[in-house]
Length: 240
Ligand SMILES: [Zn+2]
Image (cartoon, rainbow, N blue to C red; front, side, top):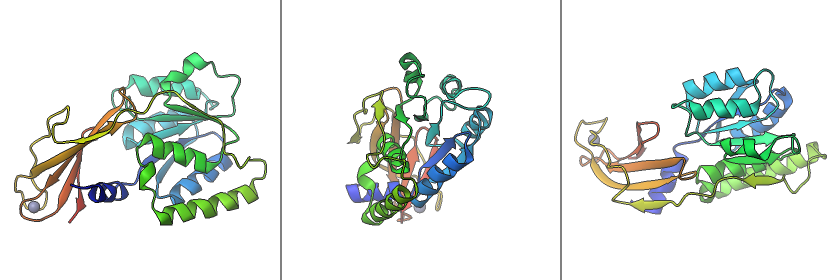
């Protein structure tokens, strides 16, 4: 399976982002941009709602403010990290609290962005965390450019340079291999019930703490290529 097929797999699998901010205007600003950039977006206005949605929706990434009503964003991070079902979901903190969040509390997050922060910086961080930065196609890129021009016009207080950013975990090494760390499961084709033929795996994820493995299979009867994601244990068709 070549790079083209992997790209098709990414494009067929838009990331689900959970956006947590008490301010409805901020949520709207980021959510609209992310949706135009082919993300699926869920929103939450406080930590309790965020925790419930994280557990029920299993988002690919969580973006949260630190200042939330009730529990803080940092407390939310701790709870997400202590629950087995949400432990491995990458977290991006987007905060106005540049000088008030103790650095030792940050490791629960995978990246920290400081407001004012352009939506495109948030998107870039999501792509970086999900290993999709190279998959931005020309069409998506032109939407980004158009949107960021509009947003810069509409929000003159936001600097063109985006925002300051702190990376807390180094990018984990990603490889394509036919001998992945976890043996691929035996699966049958959802369309014709034939045993699927294993092809190769893509091993990656955000960091050693958040390993991910995608196994690729082909149906011998020609139903298509299938992708199995270990973290979600979901099998989906990626090409026919
Ligand atoms: Zn089949």
